[in-house]
Length: 306
Ligand code: RIB
Image (cartoon, rainbow, N blue to C red; front, side, top):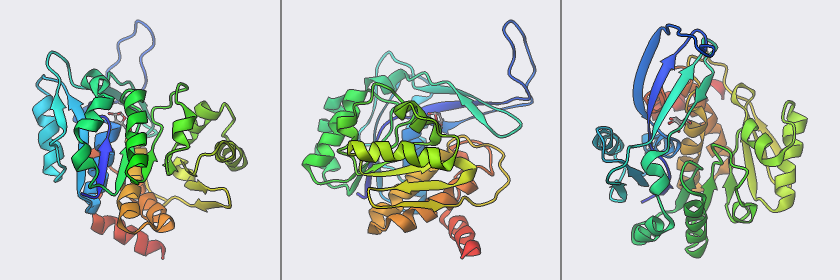
């Protein structure tokens, strides 16, 4: 097994809207799609699409969405031995609103995801020990995240933490035990309390995390590219110029693809380059997982820049 994603799954209920209704107003929206999402599942699918062997530790409800979520993960070859149903609970769902500028607003109702416990990490221990990378996000309880980080440290398995959605309760003593920390600009702003409008500001905010003891910080900045900040260096990778239709799940696309290449050979710079292309392609189609490109498409886009 290459990668373990310990995290969330959701059913995405995506409304493509012209305008957000005001209070008390009813508006017609042009389109709607339903799809499989959740930051954890999206990252697992991205890594699997690039060719990694992925296992997912997650929880679904016992509703009509549950079997579809499990089947969807399995359709990408993801190991679901530790994807369990929670009786009497709904699956996680995410009403999403995408505007004509391709930007999204997301609500999450965690449902079964909130029952993924530290014990679930230990239940999967034997299989997790076979993985070369653990990938985490913040749509499950923080205590479970902390146990997963400890588990990675105990067994010498590198850990990637994508702090999405940002939580001010996140304990940075655990973040410092992760190998890669991948926020977007708005998560960086919430977590540091610092402005992130300009690249200089983003660099300053990321540097405060490095000074606190966080290892590699990789800030995803949408169409502005990616900033990789370490103790020694700051590197920028420009994004690809694409025509964006729906940016939902682009951050997950980046993290999942980055995880795949990191697990493959540990070349961080190459992993960022490939993940930047993967994320760029993901915004050219509608949906989250449904928008993720194939390995061929990613390699073609990267070759065009070389
Ligand atoms: O990052 C995008 C994801 O956030 C969506 O798939 C939605 O389910 C929420 O988890």
